[in-house]
Image (cartoon, rainbow, N blue to C red; front, top):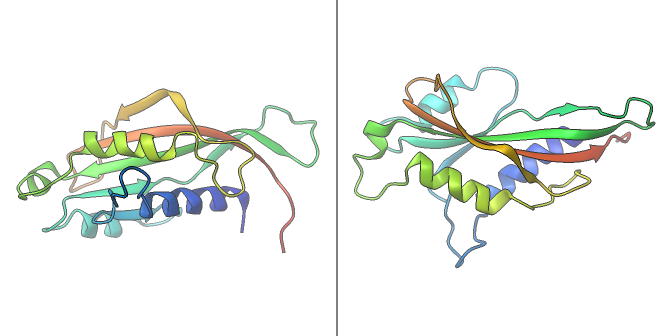
Length: 158
């Protein structure tokens, strides 16, 4: 598996097993979607459907190379973005619900300083820590995004 895919998968697993604080499985009742370039719209629509109203998407990992003369390549600026998408009307009509703001803050708690498999360093919260997306994917009407940075070397895998 690629380094970038490893990082994305490790972030997904970390959130799926979010029992770090007080043994609570905070995201246990939330759909977590790992983006792969392609159509994830249907997955998001199902996750925001008539029952849940909120989901998490781990976006495709991007990277920059600040040291082009290093061999093998070392990606010194890997961006890992996690998006919390909420259909406010459906989500907050439930007796017990978690808002996008609550969930994105828990994402920060669970991921900041975590070392994902394949990464050379821990995830560090970006300076632009949390952003509200202007155009959340339908049927959502609220979307928050947290951005983390890490680095990793590229090696051949079999």
